[in-house]
Image (cartoon, rainbow, N blue to C red):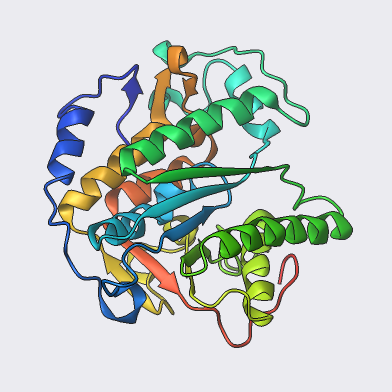
Length: 308
């Protein structure tokens, strides 16, 4: 299924406002399933903090979990870990006609934006972050936190290790500020579009940071959402090894789809240029159509390090 295109702010079919209103009718007191999300009245005020490695990861593989915690009465804080520098996205948006053809949301599927393609790709970072903020608004998160870390996970080994330490320092600050919070990361050891290839280095750095903080006793309540499963596996295989499969209620799925559509909206007046869809169209399409998310605990044989 192709994610619907947005030209400006008016999608075909129901308006965003009607979609969000429908999703808001979900009963707020629904209990979460098992130990994965169950919350007591005493813990209700403690936030659930979700860490998105890049702009779009939260919409693809975390949105349903975010809404599950919201329905249980938990405040939800959404963290953007990296700045998301990406010359490939700039290259696509500088090229016309679009490589996506008729799937592109730009008028006439044409764009020659003249964005900087070399590090630090400021226009890409700005546009991706505008999409992230629109997604967060669609999900109704209580707070957005931007670590603004340069995405150096793909540099040298020492740069990768330094990046992990920077994430740890930022997360440590949130642990100290919100001592009863739960923490949700990307399952970086699984996040690759091809199981025979190395994992996404930024995602792996995030789960490495969680691993080290958990290993030294600082991080106790931690879970991991598999983001890349929507492209790496067919629908029948996506639950492989998951400790918890979240079946997203239809009202929540409407909100998740609204968040995904933030990444396929062409509206230059709001700094929205469909950067997400030009980056990972297949993943967004599959997440749009599959009403499930896949949650993991930290495996006992976890191996930290890039590509491990």
